[in-house]
Length: 393
Image (cartoon, rainbow, N blue to C red; front, side, top):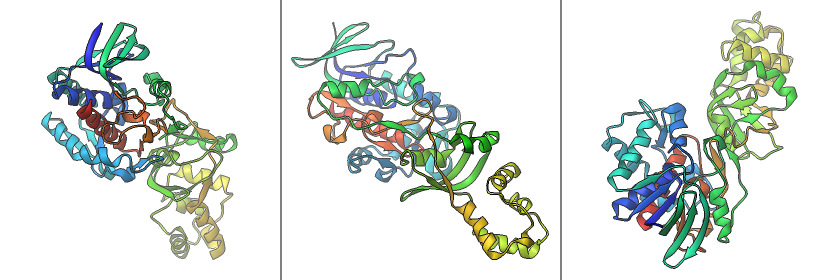
């Protein structure tokens, strides 16, 4: 029988952060991982460069049924705290748009940082270890695993959500929560590309790989302004991924293809200067020729600027400023970056992350109903929730 003060299930961002924090407090810590590879999501993130935090991170960057829940953890372990850790390990990084921080070299550096911290803190790591059952015993919990039973005082569930199943994602955290009578809210894929209706896809599929920057994409009262990418299934890119966390199936999103331009006024100026120019030729100075051709075909736009009345120009401008798109759905968990919804935050302490109905069990990271915007916010939630639980276990 292996015996530890703390057993952490899941060797991802939040689990490793929690392990190092608890280990430095003198706790004996074991981290078990059911796959062969540790930190797969860390390695995959940011195109292999790991967008490890965001300098503008704050509660406003998260979606939750209880928007106040994340405030405590984010204030106790901020983006600046993780940046200082990165600096101490000598990792070079750069800022991209909107405060996103990426490694200069490789996401492997962030994983190595966490493994080094765990090593210094005396943490034991064990891969290819599957949990078969959890039972409450005197003084803590007994966990049956594929490598034998383990006893612990504190059990931390850090197994993430359902996104990217081929990276090892499972419903383990939700199953454990339900086993102990906790409420699990409806879950769905978030930060995920949209798929298009067949008739629309027919027009846009040939544009796969073409991006347009920036667009302003809106659903309800929520708007994001970033780039958009056409794919062989539909629409992707940062703007689309962001709005997917808010979109409801069967509804339209509105896309402004020229958010930084008053297209009507610009077209009037072009008409004055180049009355004989084809509309599509003039529009090709604003977006790629193939995009212009596609939109002109769909919206039956042709002729020269000189042939257009003010009303016709206004109608044309409105089409580009208010493109209504009704996605057929999303690409689902296969390509989603995160899971929306999850364990109801009312079920855990916002200070320690301990389950109210199962003292001694802690839930951290993506499995909770706290979903960050794109751009390093979900990693910051992993660091903050892992740190706070690590202080308590």
